[in-house]
Image (tube, rainbow over all chains, first blue to last red; front, side, top):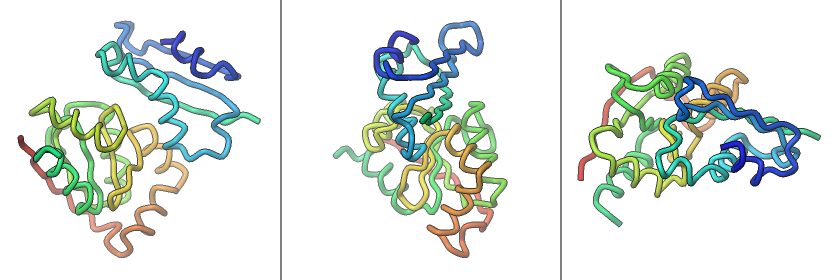
Length: 72
Length: 120
C-alpha cells in the first residue's frame, strides 16, 4: 500500500497509511503533494485511487478513506 | 453496452441526486454509505438510492461507467461528485450545498428519498 503510493507520488511531502481495523484491508491514506494544488477534490482522490487501483481490484483493499492535501 | 449498464446510466442521468451504496436508506450496510447519505440528508437533498450489494455486476458496471473504484458514489444531475470522503468534505465547506442548488434549483432541498432497483 505504502509502496504503491510512494511509487505514484515520489514528490509527496507526506504519505500516511493507517490500517483502521488492524486487519490489513480497511485503510485511511493521507497524501500531501504539490500535484494536488488547484485540482478539484474529485481529481485529487482519483489520483490516489489510480495509484492503488490494483489493490482495490484484487480485493486487498476492502475500504479506503482518502485525505489529500495540496502543498506549495 | 449491457442492459445493466444502460439501467445504471439511466438512473445517473435522470435522478437529481443518485447514490450508489451498500444497502438501502432503510438498512444501510456500510459506514461510508451512511456518511454520504447523512451529508445529503443534512441538506435535504432529493436522494435516489441504488443498492449495489444484490449483484457484484452492478458495482462492476457502475465503476466501468464512472471510472471510480469504490462505493458509495454520489452523482448530482449526472455528474460524479465523489465518494464519502469528498461528499463529507464538500458538505463541511459549503460546496455541496452550492453544487446542489446550482444544479437543481428549488428542488435541491426537496428532502425526498427514493430507492431504485437495477437488475441484470
